Each structure stands twice: as structure tokens, then as C-alpha cells.
Amino acid sequence: MFGELLITAGIVLGLFVVYSLWWTNVVANRETARDSDAVRESWAAPENADDGDDATVPPAFDPEDGIGFLHVPAMSDDDILVKEGIDLDVLNTGAAGYYDKPVESAMPWDEEGNFSLAAHRDGHGAKFHDIDDIEEGDPIVFETRNTWYIYRAFAILPETSKYDTSVLDPIPEESGATEAGRYITLTTCTPVFTSRHRYVVWGELERTEPVDEQRTPPRELREAGH
Image (cartoon, rainbow, N blue to C red; front, side, top):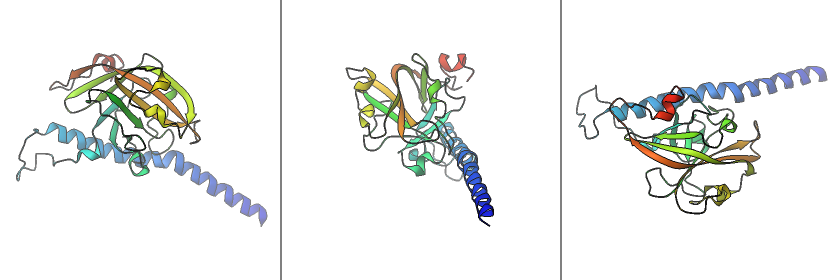
């Protein structure tokens, strides 16, 4: 009987691992795909359109459900939807979230500050799973309805305390930055399959480009096959 209990416990643990590392990805990817489509449909609608009874006009979309898309060729081929907040009800949808606590993130369009993002590394979409593939000099691109923001990675912190909020500061001094600028910070859990510490990548805005009618990606994304 004891042996049977051990076998049963092993099966249950195995099923939990499958659920955590595979099925949550499936569910999260479905949800974020729906949300991403809704954001892009809202962008495709005329900005000041009065939809009336015209069913061909996408419905109004709450910007809290997505402000844009993160593109990091070194890490993923995906365009990662970015939402407001870092609570699990945001990150578990397969999106990245910008910090609203304990340090409030700047927005890419602000004149200065630190656009700080978090996403899961394993399970629930695992959008930052390959964050350790990013190297200094790699492009990090954020896409909004009207603008491409092209950042360049300049510093990496492979491990820090999960309580180290200084990495989110408007001037992230741990990155080597010494003056105000327009920064982006990517954070996730490390080591893989744990949440003991945080992995951090910093980038600095290199330039912006307006979005054209064809939504032609900037050169950095075209060269990467996006």
C-alpha cells in the first residue's frame, strides 16, 4: 500500500509539472493571442471613428488591456503584448507588464525615465524564457500604434535580489547609467524554474520612427526576419 501511495504521489507531481510548464503556456498563449488581435484591430480602426451600427468597425478597446508590443529578436520571434501592471492576473495571461508598483514605470513616450517590464520565464507563456540570450548591443524594440521605439541593450545583471527595486529607478545606476535618459528594463525570475532571484537587462533609447501605413518594421527587426 505504501508503494502504491508513492506511485500515486509521483503521478500527481508529474501531472502538476506538465500543467505548470506546458498547459499553462497553452492557455496563456491563447489568451494573449486574442488580446493581441484585439489591440491590433483597435489600431486599425480610424482614431476618431464613430462606429454607430457599423459592425465592420472594431469595438473600442481599453488601453489597460494592451499598450503595445515588445520585440526582442535575440530572445524570441514573438511580438509580446505589454499590459499595465505586474500582478499575476496580468502576467499569467502570457503578456509582459509594466511596473505600477513598487516603482512606477515611465512610458516610452516620456521625455525621460525608465520603461520597466516584467514577464514570466517559465509557464504562463514564458515570454522572457530566453532573456539570457540577449547580449549588449542587441536591439529591443517597442511598438505602439503610431511609433517604433528602438532601444539598444547596454548592460545585463544575471542575478540580483527580487527585492532590489533600484534596478527600476529612473536612472538605473546598477546598469552604469549616471544621468537621466530614456531607458528600458526587462526583468524576470532566475535561475530557470525558480523565483529566488531576478535577471535584469537594461537598454537605452537609440531613436524613434513613425509607423507607416504598412507598419513596416524598423531595420533591426527586418534584418532579424520579423
